[in-house]
Length: 251
Image (tube, rainbow, N blue to C red):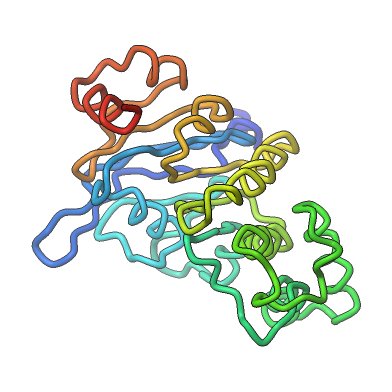
């Protein structure tokens, strides 16, 4: 039997994921695959487990049971080189988590130099290339305090892109931004999709999900309630819980 083509192996696979905090179940039996170059949006009310699911994907939270795989390789389980695996899973948070004493370029290149042991000149070249992808070459020598919130978030995206990950996780990437700055970050994400980046996105940006996502997942109560194409989820959801949520948030 032939080995499966790397193109048929999901970039990210979550299988049977369970997580509780104390006696409170937060995730129950999560099964989700994200294909290569697919953008999957995860919607749901606060407390539905969306962010916890993302954090379990790179083991910022340890799942109680279940498995996570990146390009077929285990992220969970014994003997995993977690530092190496995390280089393959880029993550962008609500807060930008930039070091205030480092320039934009310094923030982008820190992991390249510290984790990948890349010489500074080479790291700077890679960092500038990543900043160019998010439209911030001219801000490379600026410190976070000299950047707008949207620019800081784009630096955070560049920092993740510089490691050339297999998949990018976004946890409410625009929720801390002023409304007029949201569009710049979404434009970067749209461009990343056009270049074939695999993305799993937790966000309340419904219009962007409708326009840009390949698939939309609705979570509630720590479970996946429904998933499908954007036009199906937004236009004709099958589950009453999905309909009620969308009616409330779309007004």
